[in-house]
Length: 218
Image (tube, rainbow, N blue to C red; front, side, top):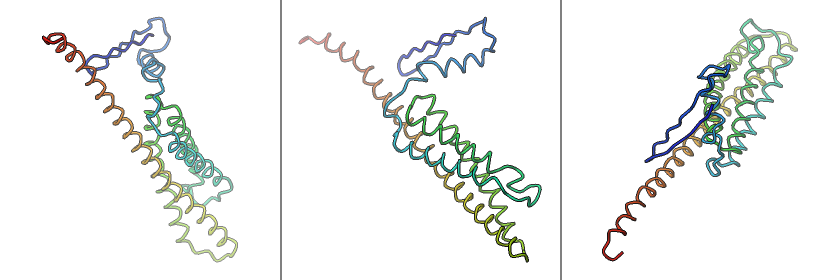
């Protein structure tokens, strides 16, 4: 499958020629061609701030790994508790994946990676809200229990602390995802404005040449 892009008066037209001999359906061919085309994969320096995105991605990865580390050894409280639903593991995996994509989007700011980074952070924000709700419910249940055994009371206190830390990390993850999304949207809007200014200048150049050629003093 070949991809060609033409631009005229601010409008970019992408033409994709399908491969009839390919085993993949046309939709998969189109998505693959767009992901590997120079239009989407070309790195645009200055589109994202690599230092800021590196910090955001690193914090997201660290929170994901720490969230996974809090998973082993959790006791059985009820069939719908955080441990039984394996929340620390899949939530930590999502945090880590979002952090990796944030880091890659900042270091290699191609339109494809930046778009994927934005989408992943939106998904990460949704999962962070889910984590806040699930951990918050368990903390509420733990604080409502009455334990008469000293060791059980101490163990539940540790579990409550771990869940509280997980809630704080989920809130921080939500803030980082929203911040990355805002930075990405601003970068894409500014890039679009710059391209529009360049296009307007290019459109005005033929008019200036025509005026100079038709001028009596030329």
